[in-house]
Image 1: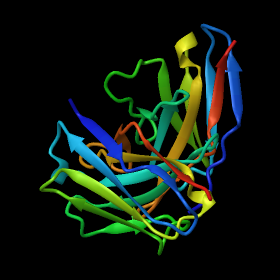
Image 2: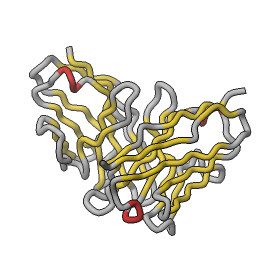
Image 3: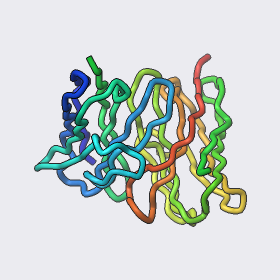
Length: 105
Length: 121
């Protein structure tokens, strides 16, 4: 299964939009995104490329184009500062991206 | 509420063994596929192993194949990970995670709080 590549960091000011990319996800239908605060367990924010679980703010959205999946956080808030991981499912194994640290300036 | 609680982590010497447990509550455990995922200190997430709801299908990541064994006891609502031949590279927080089997395959919708495994002499 191919590796997933994410930028190590991303940043934006409150109210702005930020997009985090995940390259290598083109072959996979099941791409999910997880938010993780320091010392805490990850939390699902996007499933199956673009589905948003109940309770996740609609500021979070997912998409895929070609070989790259993306997570967009609109209207950035201070609480969005966290690590974000993409993940692909290939039928008999899962692969995580290396993670992106999102900073809210 | 829906909850996963891991236990069994601790300090172990290289070459040693450890068995992790994950107790599930708040949902019908036997209906869901389960996984172990780990995170080395300061590093990213790494999928470790999968077991189907019945226990009949099991997968492992390359780095643990042949050393780790996943199992479950649906009567006890519990998931396990037997870890043998541990090396310093296995030092990590280990999370059990539920796959959202019916609504969002391939997605981990519930995570435990994690249990720390430290391999050191």
